[in-house]
Image 1 (cartoon, rainbow, N blue to C red):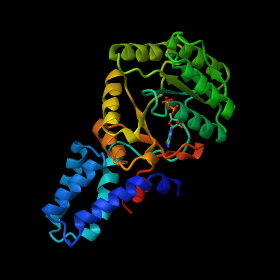
Image 2: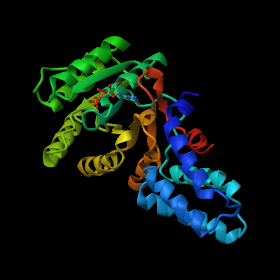
Image 3: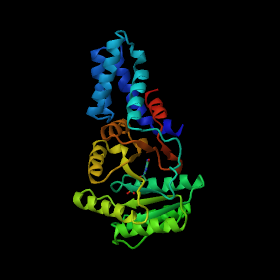
Image 4: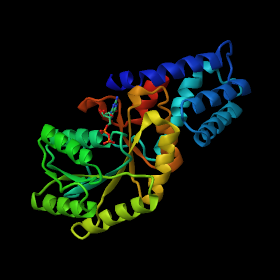
Length: 303
Ligand code: GDP
């Protein structure tokens, strides 16, 4: 229900464009496919992924020459869910973490995408499921980042490990995992700085943060979650490109889908970078961060 509401803009935009694409047509032909291609690209699915989807539908049209336009939505749903399966997107079923103690998540992304909010919402979800959570304020570049994380720590009543602004992010990360082990924590969420204008520094900083926490937990971080603002379209693609070049990103959170008509970005980014989408943000309330379910997503989108 929250999801349907959160995707309302995407859905109504897609629906009206699709209705135009198939208006007066009973059968899926080349013209319908061309129009569908435009609809997908304009929903920010991305050109490469759109072509992939169109090719798959063409294959089905080749097999079934009288494929009706009334079946198009159903077929799209199937093909897109299949595509997302290939990246393992939508396989997470709830707010739990694998059995590693503590399970260390390093959270990356540029300022303003909803990184802090996502960490706070995750902390809340994990905590309410009985997991012991610790936050690490390793975005030491901006005082506001530390303060904001502190606010979430208080709001969710979970401990936060921090140092002063300007201190070494790797040192904060080290302190955080060390304390987490001492406190017998289940989940560690480490916020990091995302300054893309200096790519070499970003890469160095993230590798150092990883290296240093591995002194305490050799296989940490167990997850590197990249947070992207879904309402920024091509910028989100560009950020995914830069972060995946700087560090190994293992999962995605796509936020602010409630504020955009171009929710297709979720499909394109996951496919293009072959990284699973694990969480989506469809609003500002805690419950608006959802575990991404590909079937619910495509159903909301294409119903
Ligand atoms: P950060 O700089 O990346 O840490 O970004 P913040 O976490 O401070 O978020 C920036 C703004 O985006 C805040 O006002 C959040 O409330 C808002 N925000 C985060 N996620 C969502 C979402 O899924 N939907 C909406 N509408 N707003 C969001």
